[in-house]
Image 1 (cartoon, rainbow over the protein chains, first blue to last red):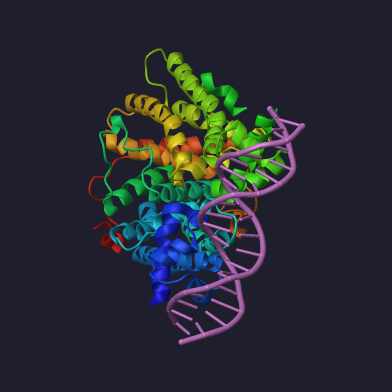
Image 2 (image 1 turned 90 degrees about the vertical axis):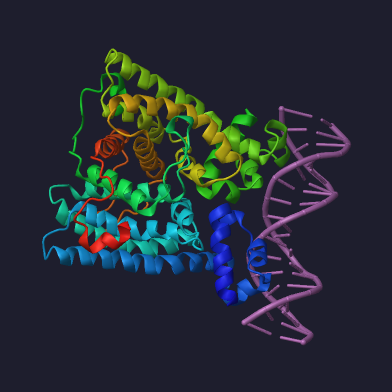
Length: 218
Length: 218
DNA sequence: GTCTATAGGGGGATAGAC
DNA sequence: GTCTATCCCCCTATAGAC
């Protein structure tokens, strides 16, 4: 199917060069078709971007919700452990690493910095998921102020978004070369980091002693 | 100075529209000058991007190193607490929020997804800082395997990069509207999240029970 | 140092044949 | 559905006057 080939090529090139950086010309060339086919099948470049995002996000988000519901059901009413909630959120994305034909992961980080159709589409797709997971987290962490929980879930999302762009600080000379890309391993590391972060004690107004740094904290 | 006006306009427009999305035409128009002045002062668009990044990153990174050194000195040899190390890393960036003429923060997230000169320049500037902070963290967390520490510091960087793009999941209906943008408050929340994440217990191979999710973890 | 003018290429969109 | 050809716009870079 031409439509699928265009989506595949667009996903790959958008991931490599960004939404602005990849032209319809190179996308259609990579898909072994012509410029006009994009407008025939999708209408415009912006609509193509939205289609690329939606194709992956819809099943992804359904799986997230299903995993969360399964975790909740397994604990029959009691809130599931943070690790399970976070695994339901991260896991379906990290799984994509194992699919060589899928180049969606870097887009997941990029959309955060977009302002047009790409962001609107992503926001539409992700908002119900965020609401659903925030509700589960509120039950698991009832002592946390909603605003602090909201910040911390944003942080947890950041961990995912950046990790999916590839570990770009590394390899450093001092980190001894490559980092693992095993999906289960990566998920575990993100989950243990974010779970601890979500559970962190809340410091109101100050956590002394930060003597040398106090001017920073007003 | 024309050169400064170009840098200011470029920073603002790059932050709003991305490096590809902002054209030299609109940048020079915003800077009340002409196209040719960019090539006169900087050489090319890529060189302008590098100049925009370096102008902010150099003092920023010097301040990070100085704050870390001060924290280490204040503890006379003993490793400083994680909160101080992280405050030295985050603080100088978050401080920029208070400077309305500075639009550098979103760029800090964007560069992670770039592949050309922008990334090379960012990498050059950030690598010594990463090495320096990793060394400090190794002393503060000597039990952590270097590879796990490297991943976790990457996560800590992700928290910063995404937060500087603005809390884009929010405001959600359920989060009750706006989140604070107070610099000290934001720093504290990032620091407490990341400090807990860095200190998290390490789960090798599995953290049961994740019954409903076990297929995810291979 | 600053400008105008233009070269030269590449972009998205579309008309119209097949 | 698919293609070629083309329109028209905007891009970066540069030459050359002042």
